[in-house]
Amino acid sequence: MTHTPHAPAAPDVLTLGETMMALRGGGPLKLGGTMDVSIAGAESNVAIGLSRLGHAVRWAGAVGDDEAGELVLRTLRAEGVDVGAATRDPSAPTG
Image (cartoon, rainbow, N blue to C red; front, side):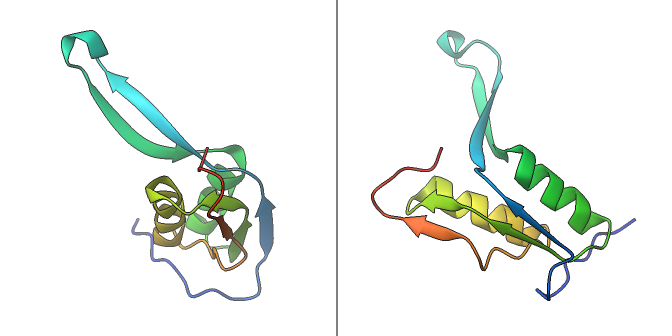
């Protein structure tokens, strides 16, 4: 089954909350293990899941004006989640 993101519309669901960076180690760091970077957070996980099921979903939250914040927004958009209600805070880092 192929997921096709849909254009933002009036949402069926609005999720509110913090989306954070997730770092997953691929072995002990002291031995040169790698780190995979992704996003995590209940609200964004629900938003992505509902979008994949065909619902129009909007996520509202704040991210820092940093690379981590851009990753959060880019990942949610790529999953078909409307991030038009999200804000960027230049004075605070993304979680």
